Image 1 (cartoon, rainbow, N blue to C red):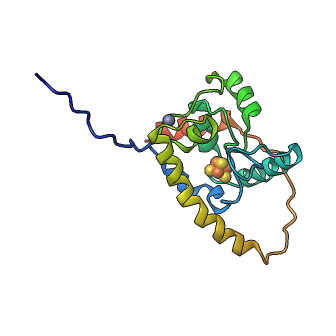
Image 2 (cartoon, rainbow, N blue to C red; image 1 turned 90 degrees about the vertical axis):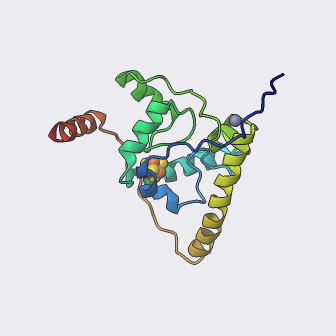
Length: 179
Ligand code: SF4
Ligand SMILES: [Zn+2]
């Protein structure tokens, strides 16, 4: 008789693109880009809170050096939730239609905090990813709260966020051709 022994379960790390480290949002752990305006991933923010938080995210994205890579990554993954590269669901849908991407709506893979928070998946991999995400976010958020406590509020003028995808593609093609 043969006995099947299950292989030990291992969390397969998601490939994290190297531009992640350069994202400005890492310096604002008190803001949620996945669920703007919500104190925790399960609460429903008031419309006004959500709008203010979304604007803050977009303004920060507008100054981010990796904005295009971030927005294109979200388009390629078919991200349903959140603001990526300054684009929300509606913006992504419009860009996806124009440039032939799948319409946003794909569920993120298991083993990600998004799948845990937004798709309520409680599989072991998603729980593990959520625990890891929170263990990194909380200390950053606490540090940030201390840092901003004494800062005077900075007036921010919102600029419309526009992605020039055509120019970006042309540039990356030119760069690839030069290699
Ligand atoms: S574009 Fe926005 S969401 Fe993307 S890495 Fe930069 S700040 Fe973060
Ligand atoms: Zn899962």
